[in-house]
Every structure is written in structure tokens, then in C-alpha cells.
Length: 187
Image (cartoon, rainbow, N blue to C red; front, side, top):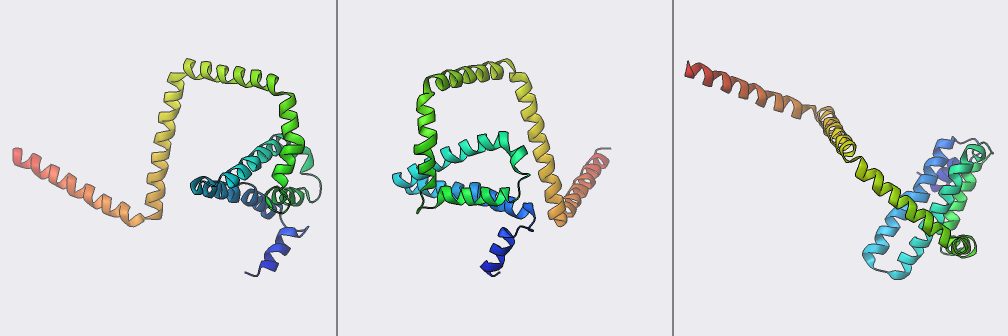
């Protein structure tokens, strides 16, 4: 596919929001996750710092977006602007994540650090209490989820590889025939 066609589709005002939203997810999360993985595995401290700054900026943006998205997504080209912002955060030439961290996020966090430490400590304490008080429910939900995942995996496996289902059915038939012949021999 010609890159120009992809860019036209992405930046076309008439393009479906789904294309631009998918691009935002890809650029904002998928590529940075892989780049973070490469930085960690490569043990490059400069790259690790770069991606830590990115995730701090991205997380802050996500929190703000959580409260403003319901209003902002109505604006024309909102997702296009979001896409451009996410690209700006990552570009080495602009160093947007570092700029955002140093000019906005760091001063805010330094100013409110003592209060935020109290809030975080309180939240961790409440989460610990909640988890310890609801161990039985957590175990039940965990078991339920595991059963659901196993069932879904078996269903998907049977759907994707129907020949295996027939083979396993044939094996089960053989087992039943063998079990029946054993019980006939005993009589």
C-alpha cells in the first residue's frame, strides 16, 4: 500500500474516527510499549529515561482525557489533534514528553508531593484492606475467570481447528468402546 494513501486516509476529515482512533492507540501505546521493551532489554539508560518520561506524560494526558474526552471528542478533528500530540510526545527532534514533564508535570508534582504521598499511602492502605477482607470473593472470581478462559480457549480451538475436535471425538469413542468391552469381559 502506498504510504501517501494511508496518510490521506488518516488525515482526511471525512475518514472514519475508527481509523484515527486506531492510529492513536497504535502510536500512543503499541509502539511505545515495544520501544520501552527494547530500551529495557538493551539496558540503555538514556532510552529508558526517555520512555519513562513518555509514560509519565502519556499517563497524565490520559487522566486529563478521562475527564475531558466526553466533551472534546465532539470537536472536529479532535482525534487528529490527539494523534499529532502523541507523535509530538515521541519525536526525538521535539522531545515533547521531556518538555511536557519539565514544564508542567514536574512542577505540579513537586508542589503537591506531600499531599499526593498522603493520598497514595491512603489508597494503598485501603486497597490492602479491601483485598484482605475479600479473599474468598477474589478466589471465586479468579476461579470463575479461569474456567471461562479455559472454556473459551477450548471453544476457539474447536472452532479454529475442527479436525482436532473430530479426532478427540474419535478417541473418546474408542475409549468408550474399550470401557464397554472391559465390562462385557468381566460379566
